[in-house]
Image 1 (cartoon, rainbow, N blue to C red):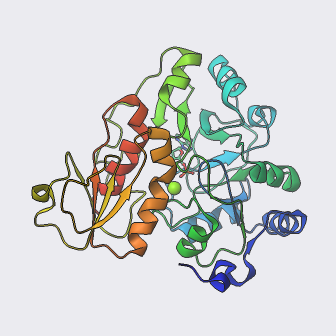
Image 2: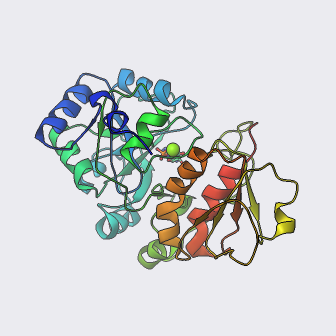
Amino acid sequence: MIHQSDRRANGRIVAPDADGLRRATELLRSGSVCAFPTETVYGLGADAFSARAVAEIYRLKNRPVWNPLIVHVYSATHAEALARVWPDAAAALAERYWPGPLTLVVERAGHLPASGGADTATIAIRVPAHPVARDLLEACELPLAAPSANRSESISPTRAEHVIRSLPEVPLVLDGGPCDFGIESTVVDVTAGRVTLLRPGALGLRSIRDVVGRVDLPDAPIGAPAGVRSPGTGARHYAPAAPLVIVESITEQSLEGLRRPIGILTHEDPMQVNLAGRVELLSADPREYAADLYAALHRLDDAKVSTIVALAPPADDDWLAVNDRLSRAAAKHC
Ligand code: AMP
Ligand code: MG
């Protein structure tokens, strides 16, 4: 249990009231960073077109420079202004799902300054739905780059306390309580006249197909062990401190030989097995499972288990994002 004085984390976890928003805005306008809640996970925000501010995100997160950032804006109109062209698919998806947990990759407008080490011909944009994220975007009047507010590769924060734990140097966290979705946005590329899924996430594939018909999957299987965008970089991400293994069934045999104590992550009640481990029983509904996944991994890390065993969820589209995150959490350090 976290102590009250820790929870306030020396006054850096603040209510998202007028005073909190003013402090956040001051930091962002001066080229610093500030963490805030979104409906997916907590983000570490910075002025997306300030090289200094973006460099601070990469430094605090220890994020590899090849990994690009998502720019968060207040409305689809702001988003369109950052794009060279705004394809019909972008307009249709934005109309249906923004504000919400969907990120669109479009061609980057020529007038935009370079931002960060991952400058490319494209830009990833999202209009978040969380009221605090919206209040902040409105107050600071800046497009905000905002990757998850955690050290690179580790578990994303779904509570204000998780942010401070992972990023002890963060100057301010606006506290919006637990995140609704608890898993990152779905990222689709709408350049090149088609729609390609780059990262499964909070918005299901079926919802995207409903609007655009066909959605292409990336060339390499999602969650493949080798980083698609960056040769030589591991697929490890979203990972707890303890090694995580995925099993097809939880039996005494499948746990044999694993370092104990074991923490179990499952959506099926394993009562019939004598496990002698800590069990995190999550929902059998993929959206509810996703919402609690990172919080459960944080709890298992807190319980200092030596191995986390996850029961493999079903291999269907509804579980795509959960399966992607679990396989990345299970990937070995490289
Ligand atoms: P996050 O770490 O949640 O901020 O998400 C960043 C992710 O968005 C990256 O790892 C990519 O999957 C995706 N992304 C961001 N910008 C681009 C881009 N220009 N092209 C392709 N994918 C992008
Ligand atoms: Mg992240």
